[in-house]
Image (tube, rainbow, N blue to C red; front, side, top):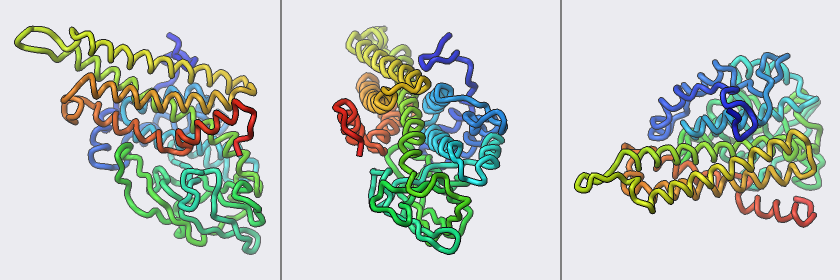
Length: 382
């Protein structure tokens, strides 16, 4: 059976049993999903997009989206860590300068290296493409200081794909990407995450205090960071988070259908599914989910073909998926009533909270609307 994202349904094997087993506990205790990430590593999925020559599975965005969706159905925190890792791997893979590129990618393929993105900064907030930190020349290399905001897997990742303005930058758009090793003493996560949703993704501000950056650590040429941020990281992140949103939607549809089919009125002998207004809400949930999944499937085709319209589709697919997740989980809460508010009765309360994260995650929905409007009217994004 063909998946909406264009693969055979069984082409990507995700250890969802392990992930689902720990999902509720990860959320309740705000803990990093160590068992799930270990299972992904053992299955080779941390190297899903790494080339076969380096030991990876050599897959592209379609397989990545299938994996992200399945993970989010079971545990959105795990899916968030995975999406950030895969977007970071894409940036590392694209580098022609990073000396340790191949060893890092091989380690990821073996499940022994977890990476993440460290782009947003306190000074520029959700405008992750505009770092205020700078690389300062020191000897043959550089040094930088920054307060990076909300770095996923901050305390567990082995490396960060990070950004700073080039030494002679005239604007924040003249940025450079570099690899920061988290074992460095100058890399200091600032605490544990306590948020409304994605409570196990270990997102934390990170302080970089006079971090040495050698030329061998550079991912891009000086000042050329936006080429990779917008041309590599953003597309992978956008389609991955769109797939995550669909995973939440599908889990909400399944949980709602299960509740309506298994719960009823003892005094009448009828089920909740016998009420037409509840069936209508479930129908709306399903139709909206599948419509958004179809748009993402079209987007992946545009990306593969490298069409001029691909960037617009990427932005639109993420925008549609984020709104769909809000609508679908809201309908699930309404359809299931009091049971949806209970963490014991259904997973809907957790899905409802997790779905809200995408709305404020950079690029936010407001940014996406602006970018899409600019693209449709022929304006540059910046």
